[in-house]
Length: 289
Image 1: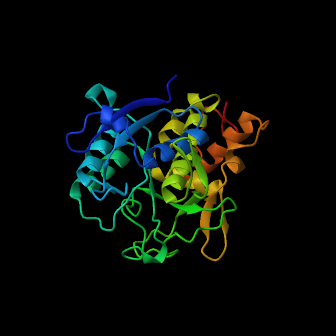
Image 2: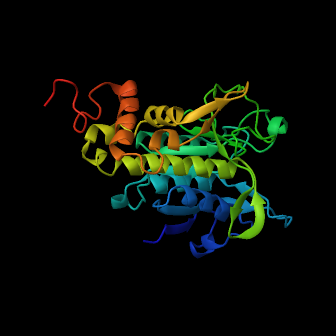
């Protein structure tokens, strides 16, 4: 099975073939991190950024392209879309000033698609001293970069968001490798991809025995509150800023752990969020047959 399902460019009049080019290496490095985490994930690659005209390979997200890409990714295949489960957005801008992007994000959430977005790489210097959009959209899970021990990096934005995003997760975002070059990559873009890969692992696990037969589990996992609850269950807080560093093995298990144990732990978290009926097709409540 090919891990990269499709390439498409949503920028200007670029062809989809041009979407396969990555002069900066940013998109390739992002994709590599996700694929390293979720070994069976299938990716749809969207070009939504334009390069700087001064030749320094700096990228700028095209908001109209972002809008079109989200809608294409979310729409059902019968209607010409891709029907994805997760959208990774390793980009951002200062202001929520584009109705089309906002509407596309809301459309994705109504369809049960989970969205992860990188917060910032400018520390306290980034305007307006806060995390970027779309990571601060209420429908999106915000991801910060941390080192391998869970300490947030100097590029992390303020720990207290003026946009009410008190719940923020972090993942490794320093000294990451990519086959594109010998350069080591740092930043929330790459941490975001790792977090999205962890989200994909959750969905993948739930679509295999014993949980695949549970419609209540599958339906619950479409809710953002379910994904957040599960990520919180597999995270730990460190330091006074209490960013939630993702430790997926604490819920999904270590090698050799029985699948039934992991499945029950997942159902238990969903029951805390949605009620005891969730997962009863697989784990009946006491007294049920």
